[in-house]
Every structure is written in C-alpha cells, then in structure tokens.
Image (cartoon, rainbow, N blue to C red; front, side, top):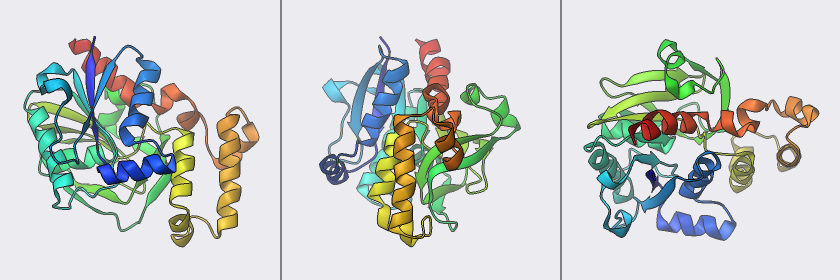
Length: 280
C-alpha cells in the first residue's frame, strides 16, 4: 500500500496552542484532505520543527512513496532551527528522488532549499481566498491543474511569498497578489509540485482562521469593524452548513472552486495520481 509522510511545519508550542483552541494541525488538515479521496493510503507525520525529529518506526525516505510539505506559521527566511531543519529535511528527502508536494510553506521552503528567495509581501496578507489564480502557458499544460478551470480561486493565508524562483524552476500560475502562486521546483533528484495557496483547506478552516486572527483582520482593513466581520462569518458559517445556498454563494463570491472537494483539492489529487500512484 502506498505510504506518504506529511512534514508538519509548526513547532510543538504552536501545535499545542492550536489543539487548545480547537484548531487542527497542518498535517491533520492534509490527512483529512488526502484520505477523503484516497482512503487506503497510509500516512505518517514528521514534526520537522522539533529537535530530534525523525521518521517514525526507524523508516528512511526510501520507505515512502511521497512527501507532503504542509503549512506553517514560521518564516522561511528566519535562521532558526525550526526553519532550517525543515529545509534540510526537504533536501535530504529530495536526494532519493521521492515525489514531493507542498502548499504555502511547502512552496517557500522548497524554493529556499533550491536557492530561491522568500520575503515579506509588501502588499500585506493574502487571506481567506486567493482570487483569480491564472495558470500560464506552462500551467495550462501541466497535470497539476487537470481538475481546475482556466482561472480559479483557492483558500489561502500568507504574509510571505517566493520572490525569486531557483534556477530551472518553472512558474505555473500567478494572480494580482503574488506573481508566484504555483511552480515546479527541482530540488536534488526530485521535482517539487508546489502552490502558494492551500488546496487542503476547507470552509471550516477558513472560519477558524478568520476567528483566530480576528483582531488583525480588522486592524489590517479586511473588515471595518468586529460587527462587520461577525456578519461575514455568520454568512460563511451558514454556507458551510448549506453549500447549495445560491444567495450566500453570490454574496460571498464563493462557488465550486472552493465548495467542491474534488476541485478544491485538485492539485493534491493530481499529484497523487500522476506522481505517486503511477510510480508504485
């Protein structure tokens, strides 16, 4: 049976805080998304930000059919162990030629591992939904977007972005907020399929993020007041419970890109089908 390892990007402290607040870990969100479509896959978790992190049960990278780099609240350019260890782990895994997929943090540390650059985005945070992501000529022909439309929206949250791709990387998609929304990045003997947004997120995760960062959402101008934000979240929660409500879909500007599991998770599905299952 194919086995994947999920590289959890957050520190033990951050994971514990999330658990206390009832927020799923990055690896747990990914596990749910993957098992929704591939229930027989076996998944392990590697807490790469922790001292002494190791693959479970004494396994090595060659015991896995793929590596997924999940999200993180860390900054890929910080010279701290929690960051640099994950970059080193990606390089180490890539020396085996293992298929690798990453979202948000995954794109950023893959770029760093291969000599690219990640910086704070002067446009500020892209949060909730990344709008109008447009695959370029390479992206339109790439299997990553087989289940996507010509232009699409996707769940997201990030301050930082890749500002320079490594040599030989291939840009696949952009939008008005971030020029690098998707790319294939060669690292070692692997080709990392990576996106800046979060195809693994669902509406529940967006609700949790908005509430977790409620103060910032108002301070940064996404909402004029707490009351305005709560009114928006009330509509979003109702849409979560009734995704067929056309009025709410129209008011919130949310459609099948976000609501249909297969479309929203499309990049993950394409990677597993094209890179993992074909190789096993």
